[in-house]
Amino acid sequence: MSNEMTQTQLLLELEQVVEENLNRHIHAAKEWFPHEYVPWSDGRNFDGLLGGEAWSPEDKQMPDVARSSLVVNLLTEDNLPSYHHEIALLFGRDAAWGEWVHRWTAEEGRHGIAIRDYLLTSRAVDPRDLERLRMQHMSAGYTSAHSEDLLRSLAYVSFQELATRVSHRNTGRITEDPVADQLLARIASDENLHMVFYRNLLQAALQLAPNQAMRAIADVVTTFAMPGTDIAGFQRKAVEMAVAGVYDLRQHKDSVVLPVLRFWGVFDLEGLDAEGEQARTELAAFLENLETKTLRFEDKRDSLKARLASR
Image (cartoon, rainbow, N blue to C red; front, side, top):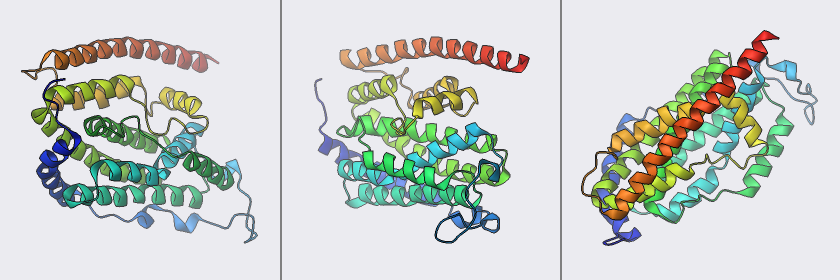
């Protein structure tokens, strides 16, 4: 591709945009405290050193899919050290880029703290199983498919932060617990602000390097996968969550991918070269195919629900 900007050039050119959006983010973000969203008075000792009661599935009445979704969301948040490592290497730890890296990490850290405290205090999950899953998932680490490319990374997190927001918000709704619903709504608000930050950076990059950015967007959309896909049993849990309406293909396409693409105006952008146009053509074809897959999934889901309802 002709006239490609280097990673260093992009980092320097976008630094002012980072600073502006960091200031906007700090102004918009609301301080909140995880301990205020945890029902501490409901807690009691587990079996073990303190001689409490062993966990039982009857301890917390919650739909199984809600419990699975909470665990997936928590384990995804748990890998924060790996995520921090990735963006610190890519963005650097100096000036506005570095300030954002640390601010984002600090805000994300609250999410795992709050969800885990809620789950253990409410006895919603088996604490031993949860800890074993955490050890397994974090021991595997996380490596992004886009970790060596700034534009692909910015495109990826623009979609991923919004997808995480949708997943948290819908998980809260199906827990049938107003405490969990409020907690996950609060976390979803953070994720939305993070999405806006990254989305605005990629929008600026589209003006700086439109053909490179279009290629990055097409590559990310056509290969998108959530960071928790290597969690043990993720595929089965993902299907359950999709059927329950936590996160499915329709939400991915209509509530995540398309709104961000519209914000960037990718199908209205003028002046692309042949390679940029090729990337946009690939993107359009993928979206058309995604709609076909979405309709097929919805038919299967509706048939499944009808069979279950008739029993």
